[in-house]
Length: 92
Image 1 (cartoon, rainbow, N blue to C red):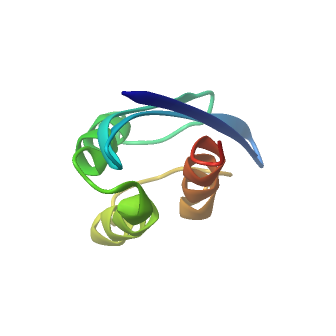
Image 2 (image 1 turned 135 degrees about the vertical axis):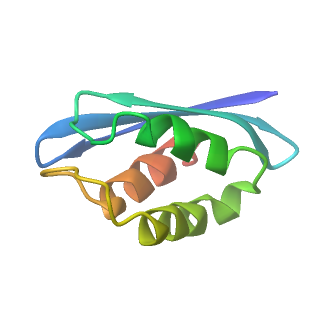
């Protein structure tokens, strides 16, 4: 299993993504950082959503996840910031 780690400094806050990958599939995804997001369970739901997808699909999954959820508030952090953190994690 390969372990990828990437960070991205958003306008206010750092987003850190850790991905455990097996044969190009995200087996486990952990998103941490010092950004604010409401509702609080959003990150856990996003991590679950990303699990089981091919690495090259992760950015698309993020787009779809946030497009379906109109109730999410995340000041100074946007969808692009999460995608950049994923990109950075997968650079190696």
